[in-house]
Length: 343
Image (cartoon, rainbow, N blue to C red; front, side, top):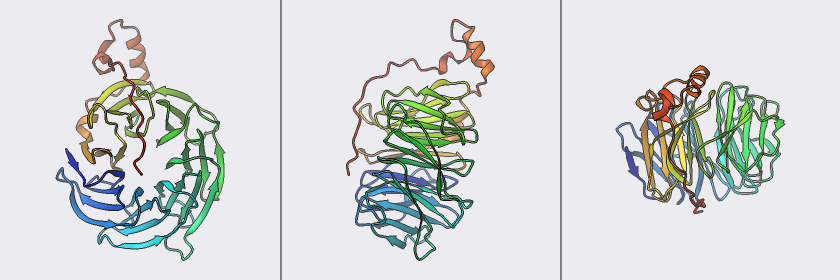
């Protein structure tokens, strides 16, 4: 199911059950709608003064957070669409990522934001002075923020580093060595953290142990892995802004299992992906086409068998590829030009 929006989307956020979708757009609008019927039934729209660089959904407080190119941070009421609070110029440089923080984050911290200079700040919007923490451990764009199962805030930067922060103690916990390329995306799971790189590889870390790289996985994309989400334990979905395919990757054992489909033309790339917390719904967006696609995941995921290490060993013993032959990629990757953000 696919629908168009009036202007190019730059960020997506979903409710926990995938029924509602928030969209931040290049013209400064924040849109919120019901997608349960396969289309975007707009509930409200708010026009801000600057291009929206990111949105995040707080289901407990029924709020949507948005960061703007003008360095603003806005808080919207989900039910009414009214802006409850706007913080002006709260970063020295343009913010480019944000992450809603779960309730176990102490000191009332609700949101983390990162900017183009590597600065990361956390916020409590209930306080008169909302800024809680300020970290400066990286030197370039903070491309993604995530929260792992050991209560670390993780940041992936264009300088090639991954940093873990203990936001309860308001200090850095560990910084990785510099990776082989810029880091673009983070996917946290119970035992492992997967980080998408600009060179098309996925860097794998054991959760909580970010000083040492566990291994690298070839994603199948020639250029950046812009998005990674976990479909089920051991099964990842990846996207790239230089490719219109959504690729599926089994991990432990590692096996590329093909694609679930395409979004856009061959010359397009998938700029954004977002998955609901219950893993029922995936959203993808092609910014240049102002297109958003809705994917129902249960029937898609059921098509992929659960692989174990013993299955991989059996396949190696079969010269014809065995049972999983029809799931493996056979396409020859083509080189595509990397797109730049319009704003």
